Image (cartoon, rainbow, N blue to C red):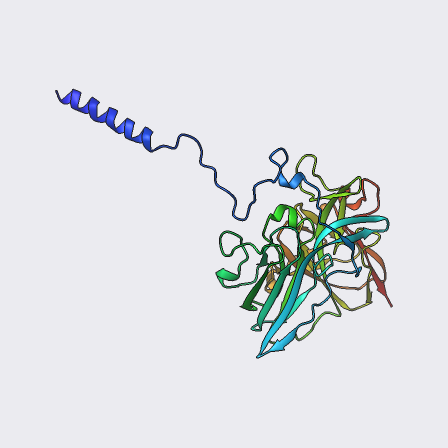
Length: 344
Ligand SMILES: [Cu+2]
């Protein structure tokens, strides 16, 4: 009798467990993801397009964004829009931008500043902005479907927060990020410390690393996916030799703020002079812990502030050491290279 009861309870337990288990794996959407418009092709496979895309009116991205002050609040205005962006002589991409440039304009503030950023969306699709690494209130974090509704085409949204901590940060789209960020919706965000630096570098540059895919006059969001691989690689929206040459006087301190905003890792190598890693992801590295290196791998989302003294005159290369990334559409030299010109 006892055996029968035991067998019966075992069967009941098994039935309950079977009923509770899901019949098929649950589909969990990535926050902010969007269903492909064309079920035959994932959204990332579609070219970047927008009606009446015009050539960019500016040729250099990442310039400081002007602001106005009202009642102690620094007010910045951003407009997301598509433009034709030149990455190299004879090579133009269709880019999604902040204010018409790649990268978008630099937001440069001081720790503790009250900032308000008014975003107007002139893209043909929704968007949001995430303040990458900045310690913002949750409602300002820019994740569609989680912390806010997407900003619809022709819509606006106002972000407001106290800028903290001091350091090297970025802002970028968080809506269809695999497409929109690759298409150009990224920019630097620098928060200076409240106490000015005692020995600021003579040269202080942001270098945002990213990738592009352009074929037959169409632009696609580059990604490490078969058929979507990049064929151009850019520093601040430009491929070598269209990248900026950084000129510095012998003996001066150079700070480079490397930012990985593409979808590939880039081991950036400096010729001629070693550097120290003085900040990681915006946070200062104590002096005793600062590694001396000549190559630093910058992964997507990471920032490294590196500093060196320009001790040797000459034209010194800074380039990615995945050497395919120093090509333009498979032709060397190109891509992630720039010259640091140390003069007397
Ligand atoms: Cu690389």
